[in-house]
Length: 142
Image (cartoon, rainbow, N blue to C red):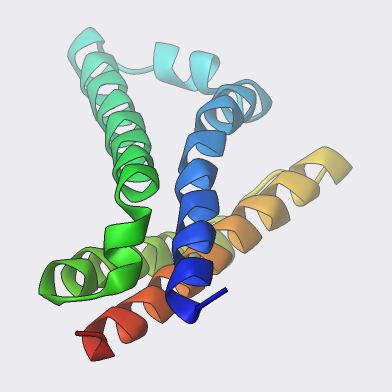
């Protein structure tokens, strides 16, 4: 198996991991009491938060599907592959940093809360690392 084939297979797995976030969001909304907190907002602000939340889910799932569908092309390299994987590395690196540094001190301190916080932090960190690796590979291929 070549490096490019291994990277393509790895990218497919990391693309699938984008979709894991959908059920995680449902669990998180219950665990963090979003319904009660959102009820305190005005109707307009509640709808704005709902629209932004759904947009984030659509973007994350869409990016996952793109990565899964184009994993071999991304692994082969070139300018588009380097650009897409660079964006994903920065985006998910930012998300990992927020999870660890911003949400960490505020996250639920229950055993389940700590486990979910760590799981999301590890997920985003690994995704960022995988996409950064793919970006470096893509930049030097072709």
